[in-house]
Length: 508
Image 1 (spheres, rainbow, N blue to C red):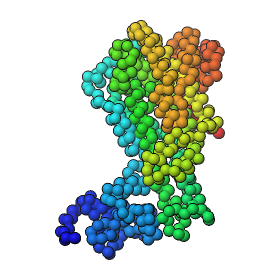
Image 2 (image 1 turned 90 degrees about the horizontal axis):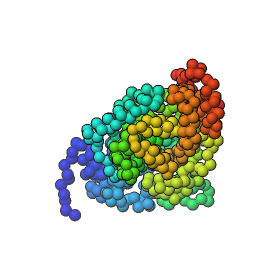
Image 3 (image 1 turned 135 degrees about the vertical axis):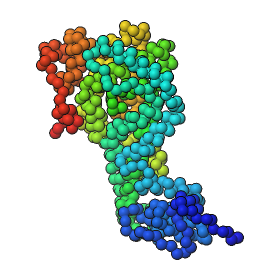
């Protein structure tokens, strides 16, 4: 082997990694690792700073020491070499180190949902679907359409216009604006998944440590597998957060390619009073209708403006919907049998394989009583919202749009065929988000309007205690008669204390 001049050293740590392997610095046979004992980092893992690894021959870095950023205990080295990690090439080494850094503390955040990964995956999905930036002319068109929609709504509801602007959103912009709410809604499920995976992994290691149980290949005799759980738990939690973050990103990115407007899913996702339209998705929706695209755009703008106006005028409604989803998710039961089977059968270093193993079997089939109560509240309020929007939109568009009835029917068919919102909630929180009693709700609002006019109809939203309930949907005429006996002065109004009580949820 001919002698070679050693490469010049750079002050940039990244250059050191390229020359000698990540976090490794060849020094011959003698090497030390500052801080190799003690500390809270996983065994032998010290990141890319302050580690000096040994070398197998000459200037070639030791693969195992390069992987873990420094010397590893002899027993661990023996186990790793028995798995073939002593002979991996530089490409495999870089890939495995990247995975270790992600799972043991590098990249993303420490929450139950890896929000950074969720955003990246969602934007990748959107990019694959195709997502053109919104031009200035399109923004002006959306602004004009929303202005017309608001003008038509002024004559059919007493609720004032919302304060927010009209927005023309690309799919990527919709992802960025709505992800915080999606993370909030899915956090209870992600926390349950983390706990279930940690428990399942601990049980598997405990079984290996029992007398008579098969040994883990490559694990030195006398080493208790259960003792590894303290080191593996952070990795398992991060793996769970990454898996669920990827699932959130996939679902939200897919929904971004289908949803027509900011609140089409039935809940306030944008966090403000803006009337948001996704022009690319509206154009796709209009293609198969054989109706002028401008008329389709106007009709959908009226529906979105009506929904935003309702959420803005009824301050308790949005929090109530979000709380119902969170209550359902918080009490969800993770299918621990599916988790344990995934832990046994999937490669723990392959997050995609673990995610695929869990997909479809994550949630227990039977909902709990608390979930049934949350689901009943949610379905009732969703039906009331969409029933009110259907009625008000029909009143606003019928005098102006020749195909208003056909467009209303197209929207109903879209909802009935497991729309994008239902698919998204089913994959993330096991919840079929569908306003099942929408027709009953629309009939109730129409009957109330006939009896008391549009002012009396809208006054029913004044307080959650006087808003229609699931029982009222069974007997809409009875509800109308009860409301007719009240005067507007006697109707309750919402207070700050009422909103706080709703946000806190039901008391025991």
